[in-house]
Picture 1 (cartoon, rainbow, N blue to C red):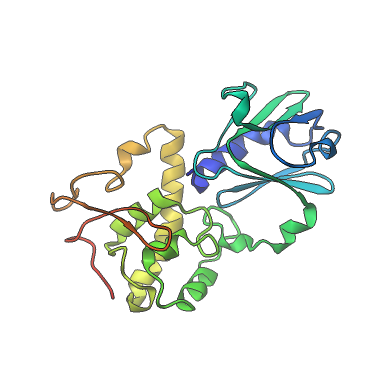
Picture 2: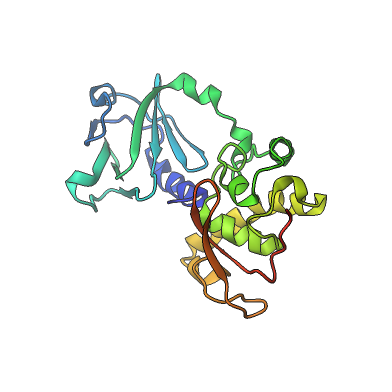
Length: 245
């Protein structure tokens, strides 16, 4: 599943279409496609893993889900995977195997932009408050909760927990204050590291535990389990990541 930093890269690539009229729209997304041509693409907003293509009265929401992708100026996937193609005078924007919704622009007012870890509006104090309200939640679930850490995905989850030395099955209410602060800080900090490495094409080279076999600290075999409410793949070290439960 594409994580927040990958969506931010998409936003940056699509900025050339801002202010341009949408000349045509096609694809197999089940939306009222006929309402899109003639709209002006005014702003590209992101909230975690979701893109919002803001027009006058409508917002096109794109969620790449597990296997979604995009391309610019070139059709790179089979037609059956094409959910939405937006044509502009200066190029084309394609979205594949994703969720597409045509929403009223008012939906943007309902979003808690402070929860996006990559946003200038990010507020760690709100994240702390939300975490303290769920003391029984496991940290592996907390990091993937898009209402708390919008944009954080499974890779970031695994790497953050290793960085701060916390076992994924630890519960929020048992974390010492310093560990809770570290969790909140690294959720954002690692996301920006992810963004930088992604742009430099060295992301996988910098993974410490995700998909790895041995701990880079102690050398012992890493544990791989499917944990939490989402049952996502989790890689961690039983020795170097302490369980707070």
